Image 1 (tube, rainbow, N blue to C red):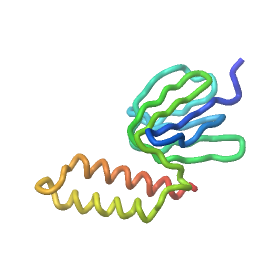
Image 2 (tube, helix red, strand yellow):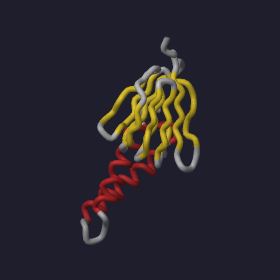
Image 3 (cartoon, one colour):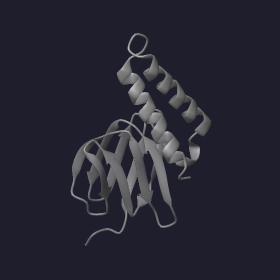
Image 4 (spheres, rainbow, N blue to C red):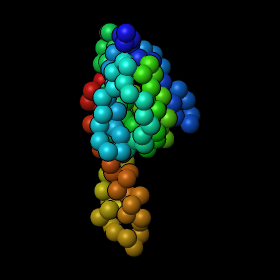
Length: 135
């Protein structure tokens, strides 16, 4: 018999972002978003910049995340992410300032900035802005 809930833990190098029981999760894997439900087939994947969505009995919560790994087991999800923030904790002004800085660096070009780093910074800022609207 399948469990009704699955345990999830979201960690960064700095702190535990979330831990609890959920009925479902949507996670940004390197090959695209995937859903996880209790009893899921075990696997390990790397993460990309994106949004984690978790569904509990009481609410749906969103988290902005970047690079990391996720281990999926039938009864648990472990996410280790370089950065992760709950939508309700995102500083929108800071995210918009980061977006403007990244766009400026991309516009200035390779002579002054690493284009790969500027592009990643822009993607992270855009993801934080998008996720912050789902408080």
